[in-house]
Length: 387
Ligand code: SF4
Ligand code: SF4
Image (cartoon, rainbow, N blue to C red; front, side, top):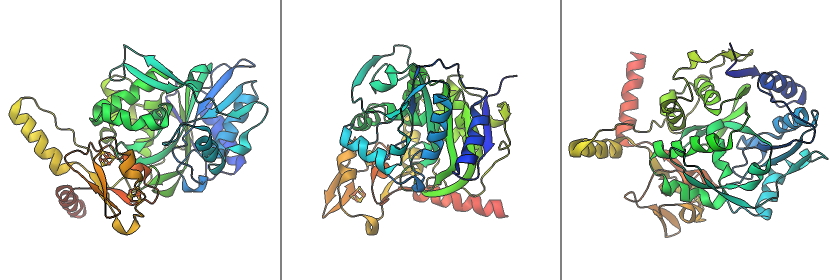
């Protein structure tokens, strides 16, 4: 019986701990590597932030992964396209702040190729045409090295969502606008892995992020390094660790619909001393549960619209934290935000609930807010739980 996901305990980022857990975790999945083979590591560099903020893949994990690969003769390039302009000043700033510059050696470099390739993928469920950063295509194989965090739109970001960073930075909002429905957007995310075919997925869940993720949440110790050949099976295991209903993660739902992932954690074949890890009280992105009711006909559509309005989480401003920089307004793909008196104002009728404004607000002033109805319902369920 082949292993689906490895989960090994790793208490901190001390090199000896990371090396031990990572070596065990990737062992069943590490592909054959020929000397001179080019391997691209798609890391998570969503924003230029100190590794201690738990926003990006920790350099200690990347260092040990590079060590495993270069010991086999590989030439490694580490890259990502942060949610910003895809140019050298932005990349170099992110590499420096995220602690990646010290990883460079004779066999390891940081990507500086800014070229973009247009892809035609007729077999895709959603993204039949898309554009990706070319350094990934130039490699002989891709390794996805992600971070486990909460996410405003997707509830959780781990392996599948990490591949969205293959889309060049300023094009990302366009994709939100092209695929505003969370299920279709998730199909697009699954398409990216289906096309790019990372041979190995590694998750830095030593310290994850809870709360207002994926950039402004709070670091939370999880103590795991996980690995899998499948981004979706890895995500299913990660959702279990965070006590998340897999059906509440749209990318997991998409993978399940397409037969790429079992529906239950218990169906995975696991290996490692961390397989029993479950984090109690993990703070999710505003307790978000995205809305999934579907029905045909006029009455079904009316019910859908009503329930969506009543139940779907939305971006909301914390005025005291807002510095009026206007980044949310400039990044909003639906042009739903205008600055009024130095503060953002959201036109709810235009909002497509992509949470780009929340993800890229530098001060964490834009939050995922539940509606009054869902707040009331969660109060009710808490009372029931304590009854
Ligand atoms: S990005 Fe954040 S801080 Fe800047 S205007 Fe928008 S809410 Fe305020
Ligand atoms: S207001 Fe925020 S969540 Fe709504 S469309 Fe704009 S960026 Fe997306």
